[in-house]
Length: 316
Image 1 (cartoon, one colour):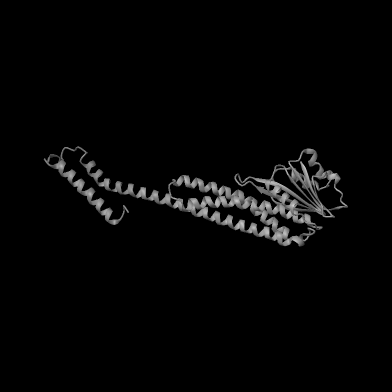
Image 2: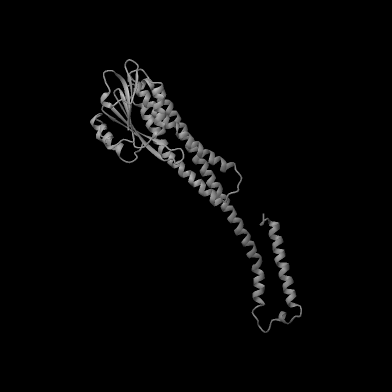
């Protein structure tokens, strides 16, 4: 489906015009949105707009990294929309040409619908109004990054401040799941931040100086998102180190307890081994109270060692 938004020189807003019906002489600027286009509609990128073959190839290929390419008087942007729950990135391609913008996406993107509605309700009746429309698209895409990152922050705070009712292994699994989510976000947010820096530093896009402050504001949002990402990654690292320390401490306590028990039973086992050799000439064997005497001695020895270890704090 291709939908169009046309702003005429006499300050009229026309929607859903066919591309060949747009009168460039009477048009101030226009926006063509290719939403889930068919093969025939996709061919219009070449036959009607005459975009560069490499840009068209990037539109039709698999997910590309956010980037900016300049082709003569057309500027090609690869942007990423982000699903709030699955964190799956969806490619949105944007062309800025003289007097128009073109958006191209293979699946429906709610952010673009919101940007479209905003532009229809408040169109810019000025020659470079299409640059402001491009800003609306990028701004909406970036706005949708915040809920996804805030949801991850809430999960981290719940685990950080909540009761320790979960086992360390389950908590570690959850921490690594959150780190994987943060990695997915980083693969989108960091390139988008670099892309916006290129945009606000570029001198090749006509009309950008009129809306430079708006694009700089998006760049500020992406800087904030990057800082939040780094902060959350540091928090997951601290939580991971914390649970690893707890596991190590628990293991050390267990090993210390087993060591104490083994140490106590070592002399007792030694005595039992001696009197279990069954030699004929062993004076204690013929003593009437030898069995009870050895048991009492073993009990006193074990109890004494236990008390000594307790006094040394080995059971703390």
